[in-house]
Length: 120
Image (cartoon, rainbow, N blue to C red; front, side, top):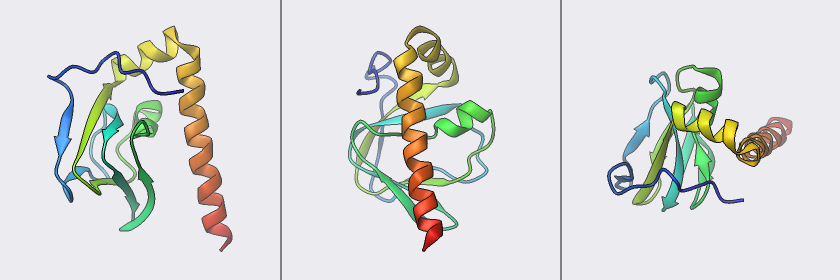
């Protein structure tokens, strides 16, 4: 399932140049992002733990927990991102249950990958 693009408008799509910080650990949250083009690296303590490509998403944990960012996000390449606000996120969870399942599957996949890294 591709994340819905219903909130995509030329006004809210954001472009980032290669190497640009999208957010940093400890930043206030308020939105997650869907990658439209390019790639974004997610770093914890300066180590890349995931690279998110087109149709992938990141930043959802801070929306679910209503907490500050727990990782850094940096544009690996030039990229365009669709921000999804907390309001839009909650709307999608309420109106489209498969959206919630898709987000949970993405989080479960990340957890499995983290477990495998910890085993090494």
